[in-house]
Every structure is written in C-alpha cells, then in structure tokens.
Length: 120
Image 1 (cartoon, rainbow, N blue to C red):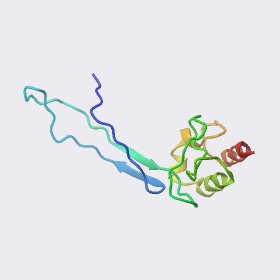
Image 2: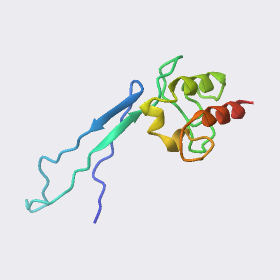
Image 3: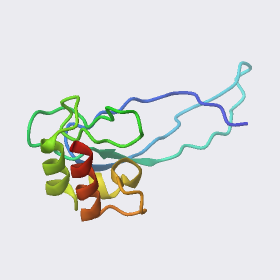
Image 4: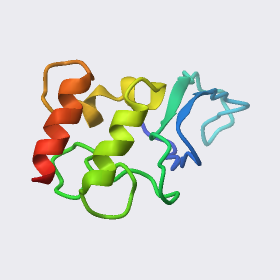
C-alpha cells in the first residue's frame, strides 16, 4: 500500500534544474521490525529567471498555466518578454504542462504568440 510519509515544499531561487536525492536511513514499525520502503529520486525544476523582481511564476487565472512569468500577480507584456527570453531554458522546456499555452505538446514560439494574444 502506498502511504505518503512527508511532503516537501521546495522553492527555487532562480531558473534551472537540480537533482533531488531521497534516502531512507531507517524505518520500522511499532514493534521495531524493519519496513521495506522505496525512496524515489526526482528533479526540481525552477521557473524561468525573471528580468524584473525575484518572485516565482504564478497562474493568475487558475487554468494550470503560468501566465504570470515575472511573478507580479498579473499577466502583462513583461511576462511575454520573459517567456521569449527564456524559451530555450530547461526551466521552461521541461515544464510543458505549465508553459504550452497553445496545447500542442511542445514549447515553441507559438506559445509566446499565444501568451501575447492573452494579454490583449
């Protein structure tokens, strides 16, 4: 049975990726018998570096996409600029679910255009 034992909130200070390594030092039940558990490693992906401010990207309209790339709480032309400047970065390219605004399964210049059209 899968049981969640912990939740981690991790915040990136800038764009990029880093490996997340998890290890289990010791786990036992109430009687002291060892419990076999699987540690799952992962990757932490930080949002794109912003040109203005240091806040993380947000989803102001709750649709699952990070339209507010500079983290100022609203969608504006600066967000389009930030996406354009960071389009090839790992933090954008590895987050198709957050930045694929035209929903074609890839992140490309059409997503910049789609975000631009959302500003208008």
